[in-house]
Image (cartoon, rainbow, N blue to C red; front, side, top):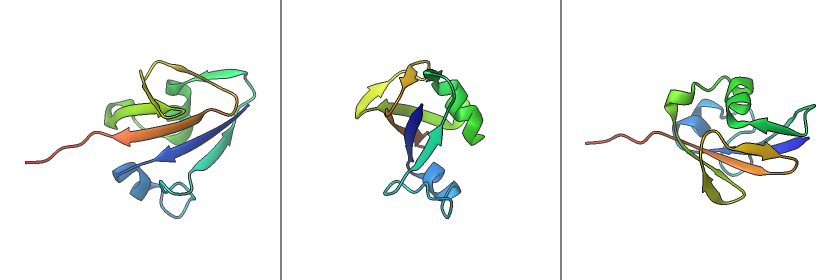
Length: 82
């Protein structure tokens, strides 16, 4: 199964140079037919607590949503400010 991942904000900067900026994204292949967002976070070494929210195929989704073949996942970091 192939999943397209796009990271935004600080996550995109963290993965910059690895093809993961919000414009390009990265592609990850998994042997399973579906994977959890936790498995994606684990594969990317992203602690779940730094993730603000995710979107799957353009729709906001819970962090415990399952992802299937050719889904596009956007990962957004927590936002802080004063």
